[in-house]
Length: 349
Image (spheres, rainbow, N blue to C red):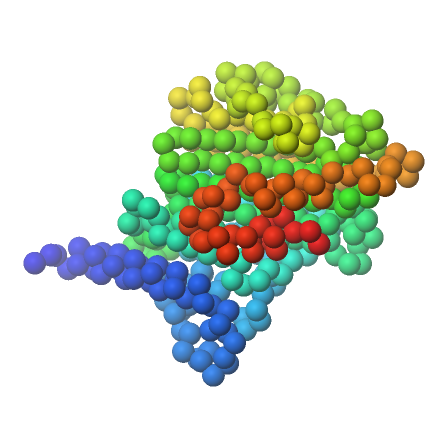
C-alpha cells in the first residue's frame, strides 16, 4: 500500500488527467452548451482547482465571444510554455499604448486543446488574444487595423505545485509556437509586424522577426533603415548565433525585409537558453522599434498610389499556405483550423 502522501499525489495527478479529457470534450461543444441557459447551473467544472483559470476563460460569461478581459497575461493555470513570456510582453506593451481595446473572438476559436502525441501527461493548447484600435482614438484608428497574438504550446497537465499554485517553470519540450501579427491600415505605407517563433520536437527551430514591407520602398513615408541598427546588433554581428535560415519560397520573398532575423539556430549548442535570453532581448527591442514607428509616423499623401499595398495578397497567402496549417489540421481538424485562419489569425476585415 502506498504511503498516504504518495496516494494523494497519484489521486491529484489522475484527477488532472481526467479533467484534461473533460476539458477537450467540453471545448469542442462549448458554444452549444451555452445556447441553453437552463443547463448553465450544471457547468461548475470551472471551480475545480487544477483548471480553474482555463474554465474561467471558457465559462465565466454567457456571451458567445471572448474579449472582455484586459488582463495582460495568457493565464490558464497550466504553467508556461517556451514563448509565453514573449506573448505576455507583447500583449502588455500594446495595451500600455492606450491605443487598443480587446477584440472579441468567437469563444470556440479563442482556445482549443488536444492531447500531446507521445506525452501522456501533456496537452497541446492554442490560445489567442486580439486587439483593435479604440473608436475614439483618431490616430490609432487611422493607422491600425488589427493586432493578434497566438500561442501554441505543449504544457504538462501536472504543472501545479503541491498547494495548487501555478508553476513558474518554463516547459520547452513538444510543440512551442508564438505567432504575432500586427496589421496596419492598407492606406498607409506601414509594414506588417510579423513574428513567428517556432520550436518543434527534435530541437527544430524556425525563428522569424520582421517588419514586412507591403509597399514599394520608394513610396514609404518612413525610414526603411529604421531597423538597421537592430539588425546589425542582433543579426549581422551574431552570424554564428543566428545564421541565415535559408532561402524563402519565391512567392514569400517580396514580404521579407532586408533587416529580418531569420534563423533555425542550427549551429547553437543550447538553443533554449538562446531563445530565453538573446532572442528575448531581440524580440523586445524589435517591438519597441515598431511602436516607436507608429508613434512618430506621418503619412505623406503623395507617397501612396491606390492599389499598391500588398497586404491583401499577404493575408490571402497566409490563409492558404501558412506553415502551421498542416500541424493545426492534425491537432484540431481542418474545419476548425480554416475558421481560425479566416476569422482570427488573418482576417480580411
